[in-house]
Image (tube, rainbow, N blue to C red; front, top):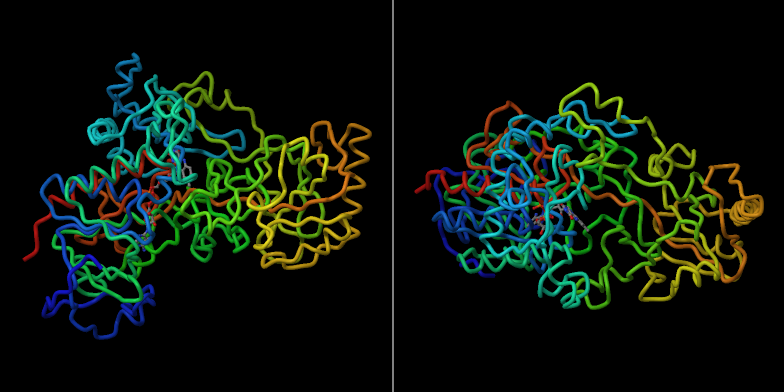
Length: 591
Ligand SMILES: Cc1cc2nc3c(=O)[nH]c(=O)nc-3n(C[C@H](O)[C@H](O)[C@H](O)COP(=O)(O)OP(=O)(O)OC[C@H]3O[C@@H](n4cnc5c(N)ncnc54)[C@H](O)[C@@H]3O)c2cc1C
């Protein structure tokens, strides 16, 4: 381990709840127990947990401002979800590129956009209504500065005007979306650089995070890979400043002291089944294909460690709201990790964990989607939740009741039917299977064999008859057998709809293809959790609050682990890292 063992024992300092090796704090009762003094194994002024968009930004800012910085990262490589991402970065408020293209934006305009109560989705959900005003003000005021800072730290954006491509609740007044160019960086998805002809125009999180990693290392940030934070130390279980963290590395637990502050940048909670079900009970363990996994998880470890020392959550309404990417329709079938904007290829360093690339569904006419019982439940071509961005509402008048006249109510959406369940009294919809035949595979140009599909993991099955196919679907999350007669009847009825041209059950627009030619296939197509839009309570400085509404001294949080701000991704994370790093650096150094 890079951290040197030091026998620095602080008399009187106590350890926050549950410092058992490798585990998270076990709760308030253990927090009351007398705690031994902390034995510090290493130290820095600022200790950052997580090396994603928020963590690396915070680390560089703090280091360049004069603090020594250690970043601990649970995984084998840096980057988190940010490096797997599409690299679409909606920073605005008057950036140099907005000015270059004559787009009039300002912090005030951005603030009003992201707190606009009047903007709603066609299904009635409001994108911005539940955002915390102080947190949005801080983002609006720092957004343009953060963008210029990224440019100054080696991030190259595609040379074009900001647009709304890849946006997700980034404000309706003006285009803000910029795109980090992948350039020559090898991509985590493939292990290879992109084709030279598209390197300067392909938007990718690799083009954001590798330059930030280089900048962090150049500045002297110490990055400890495979160091998983397991607890945050506080002076007393529920009072005093955060003093440092415990990390697990190679089977051992070490304690790292933070002389100024600890920054939580752990990327959210959507991958923690029990945590996410506090907000949406439907999201059981069958939703096992979290976007961004298996590169990194969103296991709520930052939230749980902070809650163990008294921290509060914030803005939980945003997580259950039906807009954006909190849960998405699968885009690749036949594999566990089927998020529509991420495909793992055999050259990736995590391919052994991903196990299959999946079959990309470009046309949902090629499959039917059935539940555990082999029954269809909705129009397969229906889409997932939408989000409001520039031009989504036309005409748009900021903050005006008139916007309601520009939105036509339309709750048509695939996801809620998929998550509804099979009527067995259990929460969650269970596995969703894409059923198709040999003709569909030929039409879609799918090769239904490994490494494209995950047969060994139980995410893909094939058989010469539909009845045999149903009988073969046995895997961890298929909690009831699929009755063969059900699947046969479902396909026979669907084929009759193809003949008549009318889907009498779910109004799929003109069903086109019969499922008739063996072999028959069943590929995993279960919805995918993605964004965390709720997390720890912070203020505009990114300081974490406790349950009494008081700041926990020396503890900061940014990105998806922070609550109060419903914005998909990178801009929020990078900007809050920028803010947290600045404020953590400004803290007084403890002797
Ligand atoms: C496929 C995909 C595409 C996306 N595309 C876009 C896009 O185009 N535009 C956009 O704005 N957003 C996009 N996003 C979302 C965006 O990537 C995230 O919102 C953003 O990365 C969040 O930043 P973060 O710093 O909070 O978390 P992350 O970037 O996920 O970083 C968190 C880091 O913390 C580490 N960590 C977690 N727990 C611990 C622990 N206990 N100890 C040590 N380390 C820990 C993780 O391993 C990870 O490296 C995308 C996400 C995915 C998965």
